[in-house]
Image (cartoon, rainbow, N blue to C red; front, side, top):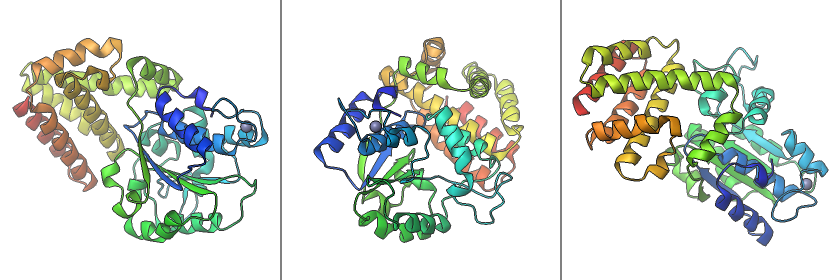
Length: 351
Ligand SMILES: [Zn+2]
């Protein structure tokens, strides 16, 4: 991936290439983004640029041996860490990212703007919670203690450090604090407040900006069709719910709650919650007169503007809190009909 291939975030790309040019390469960096805004694409382009043997004009060449290895995500000095769990696609008893690397590569090559739910689906653990366990820390430490194959930078692209427990973080801490020479950690998070403070405080943080409408549409066009179908199904359900709530139709809203509860796994139910929270944030941004941060598509603009004017000022913040509580209850295996009926009731009362 070259910086030129990245959709949006030109200022972040420029900052990363300038850092590399000036030799001020931070050994630990945290890119935080709203899901799907390109942090992984930026991390890949940055590592490719650092290791390119013939960079020019602030970008990698795309043709040298290192760039070619990066374009297939098979560079021997670039390692990936992401949340995993046991599942049918790996026979490992204590799986690490390595166990699922093939699927990670396929996914990231097809669509570097993928979501956490896309990753879970790709590695076959939709019904489980992805975690970064201590076995991962051991694996990374042993990989980084080997000398680099190519004489360039060794890099760990660490997707969702918020999924790492304290023990894993403790194991990694020294390595993150004082990595071997020419070794960098790039953490990508969607929830910086959940990243363990011991890790967070050792990183240089960079905000990856939300995409504009036009950029989001270009990212959407990259998505495989099934992703778009899933998006459409989630959007249909969310708009049915909001229309029922805004029309004071409690029965209609409760029917939507039944549909949510009938989604066929806890992960799908949580994925819908994440989707709904994102939509609510868009309504909030429009209410706050910051529509540029909402990044809604032209087709959806009328819907979001309508909902922003039909819901109370406090509706969005209350609903986001209630959605977070619903996700926590789903994680604790509370009956999903109860969870979603309760959520919808609360939304009905606060809109
Ligand atoms: Zn190159």
